[in-house]
Length: 189
Image 1 (tube, helix red, strand yellow):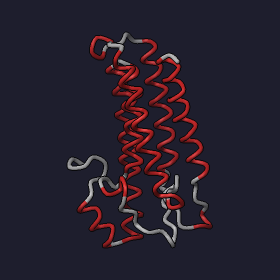
Image 2 (image 1 turned 45 degrees about the horizontal axis):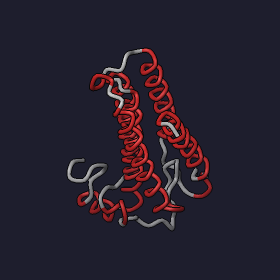
Image 3 (image 1 turned 180 degrees about the vertical axis):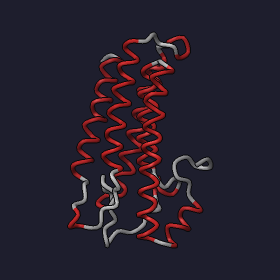
Image 4 (image 1 turned 60 degrees about the horizontal axis):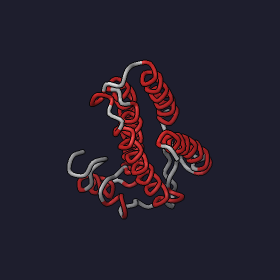
């Protein structure tokens, strides 16, 4: 299998998995209060536009990142695998508590084990790693910025929406968890 073929499998596998997660984990309004605030739609629109723009830029502008070094495609493939691993581990760890549209079920408990010991939003950390991988694979600084800046802003908004819902649902327990655990990057943010 060539690196180009591997990338296509990883990229489209990620894309398909996001659709699967979005459909399979969507909480119906009858199952609990949905606190999404339109963030899921906004996230999908931003991701679609940013990834498409990154692809167009990488196909039309010359590779500018580190002289267009081919090894960036290898690094991109490694980073997407790690990002997918982090994202899927986080989603699987939450099980039925994971919802693609921000919703807290009555029986839900605050999850503080596994990756959630280190960061409050490991699934978004994994997602951001996927965008870093896409940017690296493009080998263009412009494409890297186009894919990473808007998606990071959208993910940060989504985190804000989720944290409002989690504070409302778990109160002091979530406040204490927030004080002791980083949002995305341990020791940084």
